[in-house]
Amino acid sequence: MFFHVLLTPNCDLKCRYCYEKSCEDMNADFGDFEVDYSVPNEISYDIGLLKKFCEKDPEPVLIFYGGEPILCIDKMKQIMDSIEAKIFVIQTNGLHLNRLEPEYVNRLSTIFVSLDGDEELTDFYRGKGVYRKVIENIKLIRKNGFEGELIARMTLMEETDIYKNVMWLLNNPDHPFSSIHWQLDAGFWKNDFSKRPFAEWVKENYDPGIRRLVEFWVQFMETKGRVLRLYPLLGVMQSLLHKEDSLLRCGSGWSNYSIQTDGHIIPCPAMNGMKDYYLGHIRDSHPLHLERVYVEQPCSRCEILRECGGRCLYANITKRWSNEAYSLVCKTVKNLFESLTFNLPRIKRLIDDEKIRVSDFEHMKYNSCEIIP
Ligand code: SF4
Ligand code: SF4
Image 1 (spheres, rainbow, N blue to C red):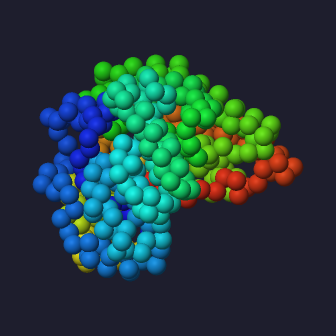
Image 2 (image 1 turned 30 degrees about the vertical axis):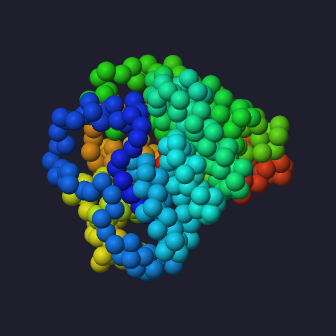
């Protein structure tokens, strides 16, 4: 089973799509949900409890998550020193990777580093100087022997030219990423939709950009015989090749759970403090027998639910955007599937001709990658 270990909600950045939006949403009501605002800022449970909890699972995967998890570096190291996880993963803003000794960094299997594209765009969203510091740190960890998967995790808003920035990340020899993932800032906040030109951006930039990216991705396979690790494309194409349906592709609520700083277990890290979704406590729960949580309407009635999986449990449950607004996000999902399905015969041909292999699409599922942007 996969578990996000929430080390702290604190972060030392003030990103536009996270900190700034959370301030704008400060007074927004949370519907009928009861939210516990007293969840501590650091782990308050005994790490021995987490160890006992993990020992009931033969293959626990622990994903360090925040806020910024490296702000709690001592707890993180304590966990790595005392728990035998099958795999350790981290999602980080990248600013403090230089503080984590190679002995720990090199035991991580996957590192997600938030980076939104080129320097101008990243610094616009995340703050001046962030891009350079992050690049410096990821070069350092590679130099110090980190050989695992390094994923650039982009968050997208209307200032992003998706095609241009993914291509830029792919083509820049200056950084050593092995994979790219992107996620729309959509359906997460209550007060942002009416202020944003989201519909226009999707129509003019995001959807056409995805179609161009898919075309580039397939052409690259045809000319170079290599499958680039663009996660939204990789994850969906693998399902199409295997003719597989999927539950929620991030795994939240069925393959991936989160452990709050007070030890309560929730389906997804964004649901921190949502008491209605407390599924137990590490003190007395079994990691392999946790209650499952599924997406509700409109996903439960959607004609492509089995392909999409539901995109995001948090957005589905909290309904921060109206159904009408959220349907724009669903259109992007459909555009992604249509672009990939249209190109499926080309990819099958390449596999038949042994230019690429089905195994080239393999990836670690539920590792904190949402797959559907
Ligand atoms: S396309 Fe939209 S409504 Fe359909 S399953 Fe995905 S997120 Fe849910
Ligand atoms: S996609 Fe949604 S449900 Fe899944 S981890 Fe992200 S916020 Fe949670």
